[in-house]
Structure formats: C-alpha cells, structure tokens
Image 1: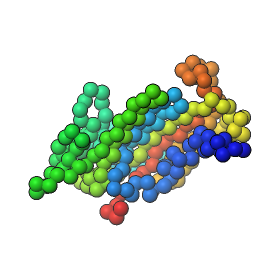
Image 2 (image 1 turned 135 degrees about the vertical axis):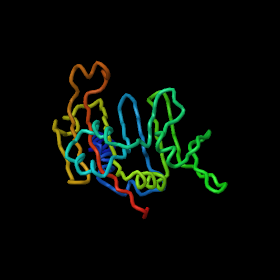
Image 3 (image 1 turned 90 degrees about the vertical axis):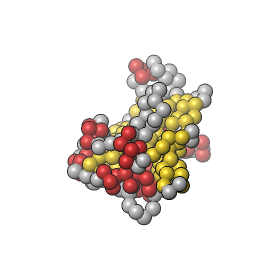
Image 4 (image 1 turned 45 degrees about the vertical axis):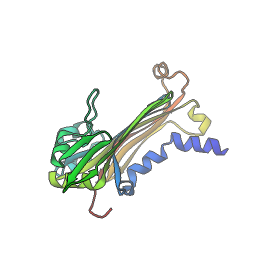
Length: 220
C-alpha cells in the first residue's frame, strides 16, 4: 500500500476525530474551540462545547444522542445565528461583562482590555469553515460560576470516491464507550443510491457521532 493510500485510509477512518474525543489534553491550551463547523463536498463537521448542569452530566453519558442536552444547559457559550452580529450566548457575555469589538469580544478590568474570543471564518471554492475560540480561563470562570460542566458534542461525516473494498475496509458500525468520559458511534459504509444524488462522485462515507465530558481545572 502506498503512502497516499495509507493517509486516505486514516482520514476516512477519522482517527483524528476519534483521538480528539478520547484525549483530554486537547482542552488544555490557552484557547479552546467552543464552536466548529466545516462544510465541503467531501466533509461535514460540527462540534459544539455545551455547558450542562452537574446533575445532568452522569445521565447524559448513558445516551448517545445530544439534542436533549440543550434543554439542560443554563446557557450556551457559542450561539451562531444568521444575520446576527453576536456569536456568543447572552448570559455568557453578561456574566463576564464582555464588550464586542471589530476583532471579537473583550473583557475590561482597571483600564486594561483583554481579548476573549477569536473567530476564523473561511470560504472558498471547495467549502467553508467557521471556528470560534475562547480563552480557556474565561470558559472555566463561566462554568464555575454557573455550576456546570462541559459536554463536547460532535458529528463528523467524510466522503470518498473509492469504495470500502478498495481500502480493504468492511461495512461496520462500532460503539465506543468509556464510562463517565465519552460515548460515540463510528460507522463506515458505501453510499446508498439516494445519497449519491447529492454527491454523485462519492462512493463511501464514514461518520463519527457522539459526545464527551470535558472537565477543565485551574491547572492548564
């Protein structure tokens, strides 16, 4: 197998996304992603860092789906809406006394201004992406004051022009669980005829769908 085939194999198997779900170190940087969305002919990715109550945290890991978790959130951090300037939730902005400027949100203390967010939006011929990063210490301050924990909700779909047989891969669904930490489904299969109507060049898809608990501490 050539190096090119090996890379394509790993990409379709979504090893990078699965690693992010399993590895807590991803959330230890100065800036952490609270919202990610990528759309192209070969990929759809959506990831959201959602605060939920302490009481909800143990229960949510018993259910793979995360739509209901929004009902148990006391306030979202990122809230992206069409034709709205603000992209952070109202309670998050007010609790941290954030002001909106041309390059993002800022906190002000004793005459000193500190940037709290970074938003990177890219759009090209092949697709578009939107990422919102927030300072880790600001997120930690918010969840401590609202008595919540963080849930990373993710759905990642990737497409390939080759069939699974070409990779030596089999059609199979897998459920990966780590009690109290994460749960997600991974599946890979050839596209159904109706799906090929939207992507006629594509033959294969893989999907990661699930969530993990993200526990921030004062030590980065």
